[in-house]
Image 1: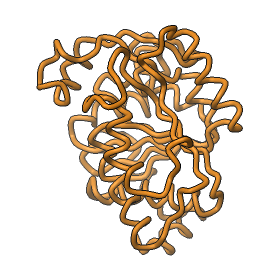
Image 2 (image 1 turned 30 degrees about the vertical axis):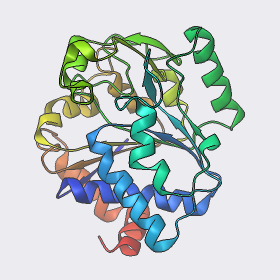
Image 3 (image 1 turned 180 degrees about the vertical axis):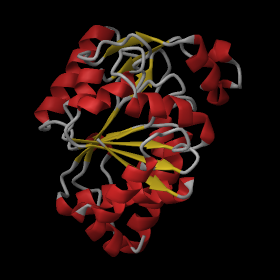
Length: 267
């Protein structure tokens, strides 16, 4: 695991978007794992801008989202399909058939979960998995006590998650679906590369626990410590409770990969 600290949330988002851009240029058929939420909106805005200004090509890219609510249709304003269409898919040249989210309206959710796992495997696995982190340390909807080897499955959401996700449901937690389909922790860890973006002071404490604390099913993001190629990108506010800040800054300046990357991107 490596930690990259940027001054602002926008700079952190721009760096993550630049990483995706680089991977997409190297491998146009990239299998990209995607996340939702406010933290990701700037990442997608940067990708859309790069597509429009530099002709970044998404035509051969395939995407798999981490999760989707159970029981609401794809056109519901609170669905993650609607979010992805609004923030990214409708603004770039990606074929809708190549964009995948779990179907939360499937008649048999267990079958849908197994189907999603098979489809990821048929595409050769996820090359680059984008992640955020919840206030309780979850990735995807892997709420506390999610098994570290878990697969795509239906999951009950915590009261805190319902409250925090209420904005797209009339700011009423009672309107938020109680369950979701999520990639499992084990599914996420099989991605070839993971990049987690966290910004804001309100993520600082849980981020420090996930990155520098013990690996525990109570904080599913802590399992990323086991991943052989995981990068954590944060702004100064989110990094404020990390103990190893000086070392993380030293690595970003001195590691050959990041020296080359910074030179290309003019960071």
